[in-house]
Length: 108
View 1: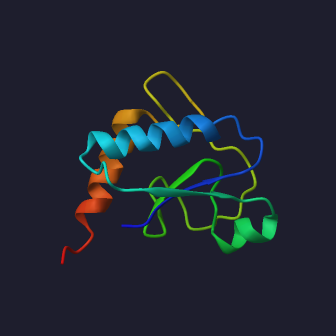
View 2: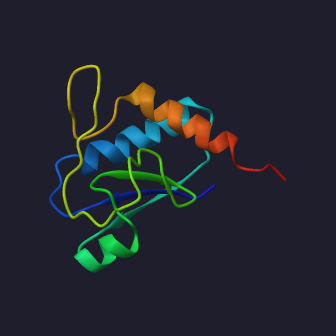
């Protein structure tokens, strides 16, 4: 399972997103699963990665919170949470989508 966190420079959610992702992976039993952080610093890279905004959580290239297939945004992303819009998703929501995506991955 290839887990990535995509961020843009200066996005206020980047550090919190990294901590949140580690917590969510650990919480669902994927303690040994590492993730990479990629800084998207040009519009060309954003378009090539179909980047929907920072931070973006990907598993095997799939944006776990994708709402459309356009991509290419060099903006900070807002996530709906029980406490209102935030720069990162709620922990329980990240756990849920990680579980769903990891269940789709064939086991050897």
